Image (cartoon, rainbow, N blue to C red; front, side, top):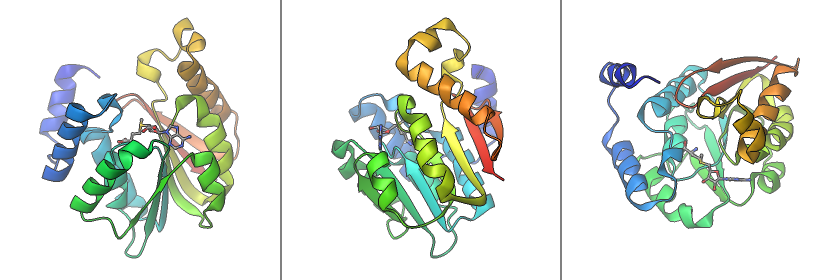
Length: 210
Ligand SMILES: C[S@@+](CC[C@H](N)C(=O)[O-])C[C@H]1O[C@@H](n2cnc3c(N)ncnc32)[C@H](O)[C@@H]1O
């Protein structure tokens, strides 16, 4: 997004709260690939969507340092639960600490391991799923979760415009880019769902199960 427009959007949106601002800063200081964290504007959108849906059950693939998990957990219905899965066990301590500082530990169930292995062991039907793991595996995640989303429920997938390079040869040659291209085609051809790509940050696909 154009820098000027981005600044304007920031200045006219609810400011990032202290816990998320600190988490974002610490992620940039101490964690590899800090640009993977959702950050202020995308985080606020996820929080708003969660508040709109008021889900009882949320699933996230790719906790990383916990930014999006905190945002999504804030919109849960009272008594609702969020399952968030992260394959890199080195991130657990940090994400758990910030989830605690944000006051949502009672609602967030953290899992360490590969989503493909953990999701089949979860028994709930999800109102909202956030796909934000390895781009090469998006199609796999989708196939595993689609029947676990209630009718009328939503899947949101991050990075679907792949840095604005989605229609380039570069995307086809890069395994991550190719994973996203294949995912977008799969969603386009799936009549079980309605879909919309929002050009926010790296592109968010909003997918609704009919
Ligand atoms: C883009 S980051 C997630 C960012 C986070 N959702 C946020 O917005 O702050 C992707 C994360 O997915 C994790 N990951 C990759 N493959 C995975 C898998 N198969 N199952 C669970 N986590 C996975 C990575 O280790 C990485 O931490």
